[in-house]
Each structure stands twice: as C-alpha cells, then as structure tokens.
Figure 1 (cartoon, rainbow, N blue to C red):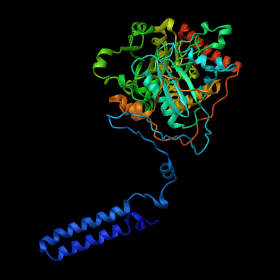
Figure 2 (figure 1 turned 180 degrees about the vertical axis):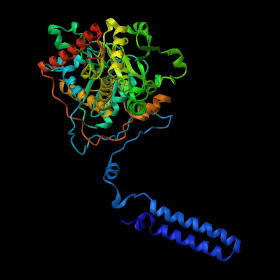
Figure 3 (figure 1 turned 135 degrees about the vertical axis):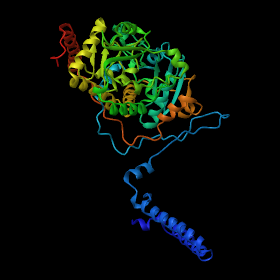
Length: 506
C-alpha cells in the first residue's frame, strides 16, 4: 500500500488538514501585513510537519503487518488479575489449559538433561507410591500437588529467606509457559543446603522404599532429585536479579572488558565462615599466591541493601574461584559467566547442570589439599598461556550463557517433572491441608524487591514451541567412560603441579 494512501492518513486526517489550511488562509487575509508574515511562517512550519509525518509514519495494520507481528497479535497473554487490597485474592479460572504450540521443537536439549534419567533411576523399576511420597514429609519443607493444571501447596517448615517462595513461583511460571502439558503431580521439596536422602539408609530391600525428595543439589552418597534453585527467579534479600536480566548484565561486561585487560589474579568474594572457605584466607596474597580474597561483610551489606555487591561488577579479573560453603552454592553460574577462567576447588556437591562440565574445557581444577599452591600454579599457567586460559574461560562462559539460558532451565524442569510423573503409581489428589497457589496469590501482595523479581519473571504467554527434545539415558559404559575421563584430566593437572610445569602443558 502506498504511504499516501495509508488508512491512518485518509478521510479524517485529510479533512483536518484542509480545515486547518482554510482557517489559516482566513487569518492571513484579515490581519496586518506584519502579522501576515508571522503567520505565514507558522503555516509553513505546520505544513512541513504534516508532510514529514506522512513520510515517516510507522506501518501499522493492513497488509504491511509483519508475520512476527501477526504471531504476537494472536498470542494468548494473561497478566496478573489482582483484586483490591481489602479483598481476598483468589486464583483466576480463565488460565489457558492447553498448550497450542505452533510447532514441535526440533531443538535437542543440552546434554546435561541426561542426568534426569540418572536421578530418577531408583524408582524406574517399581515406580512411586503415595506411601513413598508421604514418607518424605519429615524432611520436606513443602508438598506441591498439581491436579488438572492447578497447583496446591502444603507447607511443613519455614525455609531460609524466600527459597521456598521463589521455588514455587518458578514452577507456577512453568505451568504458564506450557499450560496443560504437565501431568498431575505429587512431590515433596526440601529447601535446606545439604541433601537429605542418604544411600546408606536404603541398601538392599530398602532401595524399593526410597522417598523421592526434590532438592537443589546432590552428591555421590545421596538420592535427592536435583532441581533448579530459587535464584533463577531472583534473590531479593541480597539484591540479586533474576537470571535472565543478570545474564544480560554479565554479557555486556564481557563485551566491554577484554580478558587481557583484567587483573592477572584469582578473585573470590563471599562468606568465609562456611565449610572449607576459611582456608582461603591463607591464600590472600597477590605476591605469594596470586590471589585476592575478599570476605563479604554481611552485616554491613544487609544494612545497605547489598547495593555494593553487584555481580556484574565482579568480572574484573582473569581468574575467578569457586569453592563450596556448607554445600553447593548458587554462585557457580555467576562466577563462570564472567569469561574469566574458572578455578574450581574440587566440589563434593553438584547442581542439575554442573555434572556435565569438563575440566580443562570449562574450568581449571583446584586441588583442595594444596589449596594456595594449586591456585598459584593455575594463575601462573594461565598468564604464561593466555590464549589457552582465555579459551577455557570463554568455553565455560559460553556453556552458561547458551546451555543455561532460561528456556533450557524451564525445559529441564518440564522434562524432570514429566518423567517423575510417569513413575507415579497413583492419581494425585489435593491433600486436606493444601491451599491453591497461583501467580496472583504469590505476587499481587508482594512488596519491594520481591515484587520486582516476580514481575520481571512473570510468564505472560505460553511458549510458541514445545520443549526441547529429551536426550536418551547414558549407557552404563558411556557414563563410566565420561566420569573416568574427567578424573584422568584432573589427575593430569595435579601431576603438572607436582612437576611445576607452566609453559609446555596443554
């Protein structure tokens, strides 16, 4: 359609132009010559304005509407339906109940999705009964039941800060992203630091009675089902943004700051009074150990709202350390996203994605038995092999930015819960003590940073595609080969340290 014939500028707009011109003409013939000159310039200015508007007006509607605009216009959107403050907030009845994806996803899920099969292995043979789920009540912080796409929660304990709150919020957003696709579910969730279901307590015949407990981390001696932690939707108490906007901040910092322009030392900042972290203080010397260790002053930061603890401001060193606290730490993804070479102190605990990280590809392994000298060797090696060190840093960062994008986090949750649902040997029902939860009941009355985090992560429309395609489980031999390969690489690095080689190892 020609711009001159655009519907936004026909009929009414033309009539307004002609009326304005007639009125200005009358003024020019009924006022003094001096004033006529003045109004002439006004008339000229207005005429130019209308011509310019016609030329530069955006193309809305009609046949010029792009395909993406048509898709956007046809998308189902559901914003929050909040009631007045003095009324009781309830869950709307008009949420979408079917996921009308335009196409099946041809995208393969990241390789770390294969660990879903491993985490659910204890229940593969005999499935999960109601009695097994309810046996986990004494360890759980809350029970989540999904029936016909609606969620119900029964709380047993108060979690630290808002861990449970944002975990439930994340699952509610999953329901909005893929409405009608999750099966009915009944699960227990533990929100503390360490895993709670120990393998040693379920040997032999007891292995058939393992209570399935969802948790943020696991280790080789536990059977907890590992699930993404609450911080992907924000950690308001310490001023950490939700994962998606924070990733954008980190990407911007990485674009601005070249690796070679960064401080040539290892950097760590955090709470030293947890686990083995106190040992890091011995390494706090750039001259002796190539390390800068900064204790987080929690009392001071709490008083000031953690305004000086912006994670994106901490991507200023070539090397960044990760060390566990009481158990795993949510900080690993933030540390690894900086393009710095990650120096990972050998970890006992794992998150849902970390088991697929490979030493010398995504990080440099640090020996906790020789902590300070191991850090010094890694930094000396990196400064003598800057291209290789940059490659490790960028590969680790790329893994986080691409494999751990929020779409994949949701897809991991979806596949884990779907596979778990297949193992249930009963039809879930709403427990007597449970209450219905939805985005409205959790966000409408929220205040401050908590509300901001929830508004920033609110899923407003269903996904246009289905979840990624789930990879098959590991064969026993291939899993063993993968784990052996990681151990061999770590052992080789420890051997380099003993020999003191920093220039001719690869």
